[in-house]
Amino acid sequence: MIPLDHVAKWTAHLDASAQAYLSASEFREYENIPAAERQQQIRALLERPIASFTIVNDVYFRARWSEVLSAAGLAASPVVLEIASGDTDVIPQMMGRDYPNSRYIAANMNRRLTAGLREKTRDLPLEVAIIEDDAAAIGRHLQADSVDVIAFQHGVNDVLQAILCDRDGVDTIQTDWMETLPAMIAILQRETRQGTLEQSVRPGFLSLLETLLAVLKPGGVIAMNHYMFQLDLDWGYPPDVWENLIPMVRGWVKDLPGTREIALEGFDRQWWLFLRKP
Image (tube, rainbow, N blue to C red; front, side):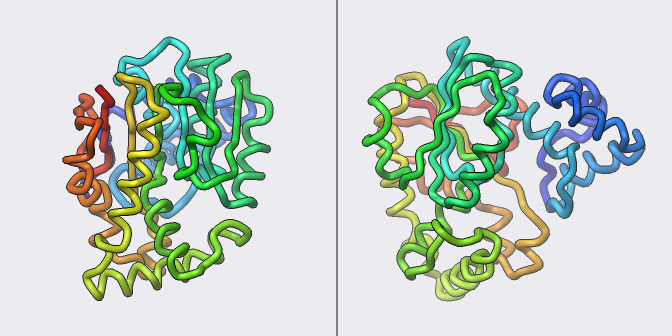
């Protein structure tokens, strides 16, 4: 596996990032982990598919998204729209520390995950809005040219899986996402085996991006990242698709009207894709 990031950088910066991006109770949890184990956890996170969920993961991804917003050269108080957020609060937690009083918007349809996100973000010092609708209908909820960043924080795979599930009549809205995941993986296995994955999901995904571009400000950025979970591999997620999701999508978006790919220094193209709206 290509490492997610530079191990030496994050082993050196981990404690400082924990102080910057964890709450007081979270930092106590972090300090209760022996220093050597913290270093071992960050190495494992960056070098192998993720097999455990610890506070070290939160430190890394919050700090990393802070670097995304800084490197993208955006407004001092950006408006961020996250697609397929689930209950992951990496981005709003970071914004509450780096950009208090800014605006975070999540587009997420799964009811249980949305409830979890509301709970995790309810005390943050920023405006949080959650849109419980298909992101393809974002124009009904947001004005044109109103968002600085559109983020897919490990959300591209969820969008592609939802496209397949919608086609096959598998409910991804009212169900427990993890209970539905085996059915999603079975569909992906079939599509991969038949060689039909791209033709099944590419049109819908590109149509979604074209819709999202309408609410993105000129100069704004679409930022996508991906990483692998060991559980998905254990359950049969096609390994080549799981590891090469961003390179696959890069091939689809190269001719997407109204965008150009940009490179941000220090972000590996295996795991990150950035598109700027001129």
